[in-house]
Length: 441
Ligand code: ATP
Ligand code: MG
Image 1 (cartoon, rainbow, N blue to C red):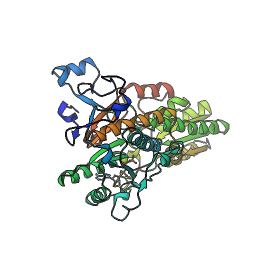
Image 2: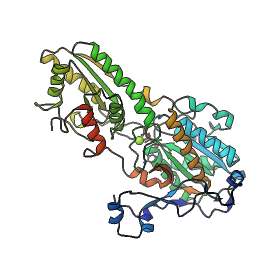
Image 3: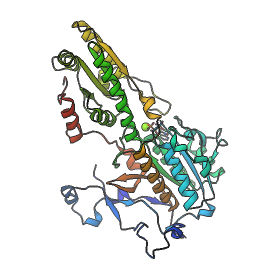
Image 4: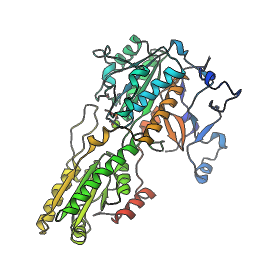
């Protein structure tokens, strides 16, 4: 996709006229380097060839607005009420982001009030709008030591007009939405109603995806914790399959459209013999199909371990018409399907297998963030607060090329980050597993 500088322009509610309370903290220096300079922009591309291909001067090349504290802000903190909502599936680090936002708003901006909406967008619906949670420093202390989200989450459509009514009833000036692609589409719908009614409410997103399939993001928060936890399960089936006669271990990991967790976890343990991801289709039948390859591997090594992303091999399954509450298509269960087909195949050729199958998705999603992700989450939270207080709206904060930047919401939901089958990550997986580039295709 070819972007222009205009595509990357983030929206603001208006001119920033209030002095940032950060001045107090940074007052020892007359011109603090900590404030963001408007001409400090982060390039989208980083190779000379791509930069030259734009054919425009360097200040017209696509670049992101840098996140961080501004000298002047849009909202008067003493009169600002902030809302926070978490939506979609669980991901390690949600509580760290909530705590980070509350701390920053309380300790540095001294805002009037912070309200948490309960159970995702459902908490903004007419029926649930009274069930808010007051978010004070005391309320959020230690919450990052637990997984999940203290605010709860949900799927399913809510009426954006009703949700904006809720924001008005609670006098919300800035709403922080922590959630996935669906949540960001929901947040965009909110901003459309806010615009239509000419309201002065900022909506800032902190994008979440455990699958690491977020575009324009070095790595999404919670991903590192997730793949680290996933390694435990690969290790378990490796040990189980090693101890059994004709041992077969299969672990199904998250990754509806992108196999990052499967690849990183497999590389980390380095005991997987086959890694199957959505981006690389494979076939079962024939001499070079998965079933014969598993059989040969078992005959040679006495055990075999497969790591499969939940979105892999969907072309082998009957298309499902079912959808979840948010309208996302439900995937067929590739893990159980492979377990059955491999068991049948090996039994037919006289290798009665001992199959150990694990589907640990909930055990991975629900853990607290590790040290790395906790640092990342708190810094994302700070960036989100600075963006919101400076009146940025329809905007998300992400980390790109090791800097925190502002990205228009529409860009984040426009496409997904996927593993390039010709790229170096997939090459590393092929090198580590020894599996061929094409399986049965
Ligand atoms: P994940 O997929 O990582 O679990 P998500 O944010 O994509 O997270 P969803 O359940 O798809 O999770 O969406 C979260 C919320 O956003 C739901 O309440 C859903 O109704 C709402 N939503 C999703 N898509 C849209 C849309 N196009 N317009 C308005 N609201 C949406
Ligand atoms: Mg989603």
